[in-house]
Image (tube, rainbow, N blue to C red):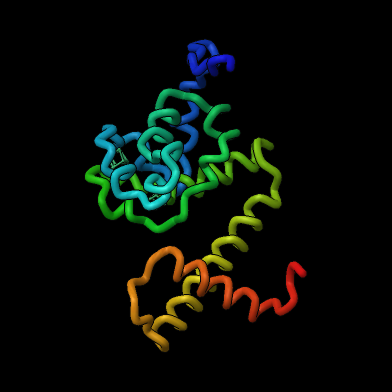
Amino acid sequence: MEKEDKTISLTSLEPRFKFDLAGRAGAEGLMHCFSCGTCTASCPVSEIDPEYAPSKLIRMILWGMKDAVLSSNLIWMCAMCYNCSFNCPQDVRFADAMRVVREVAVEESFAPPERLAMMTEIDRFSQMLRHLILDRLLKNPPEGPVDETLLVQTARDILSEMNPGGGE
Ligand code: SF4
Ligand code: SF4
């Protein structure tokens, strides 16, 4: 297999990118990041996806890797849980900055406008499913441990009740 070329071309960097982002409400703190990595260590998405690292995304922004950032699927992976913001010693407010990055990605046609509506719908659905799973387990506490198998089965039960006959 051919090795992927991850070399950064200095001529493709856009030094103004970080200033343009930091000039928008929500992303002002980006310039204060000192790469401590605390955000990545406390991020639940980084825990399940090794490719996703908020501290790396900020580094790419500060280096001016505009095209790579705005075209990356990673900017859509943030679950907006704000763990990173609570733990950041520099008050960078990464989740708010990601909202700005997503808006710019759409404005500059790196992503279709429908993407923002899709994200809102996915977040709403995820929250609803979380609420329904919790509600069910609180009303009928399981005798054994709550593990992934139990959660998947509970989610399946809920989804099939919501959509009887779905997928058949
Ligand atoms: S925790 Fe804050 S300062 Fe540390 S890398 Fe993340 S954003 Fe930067
Ligand atoms: S807000 Fe996003 S980047 Fe920050 S910890 Fe949550 S999922 Fe990770």
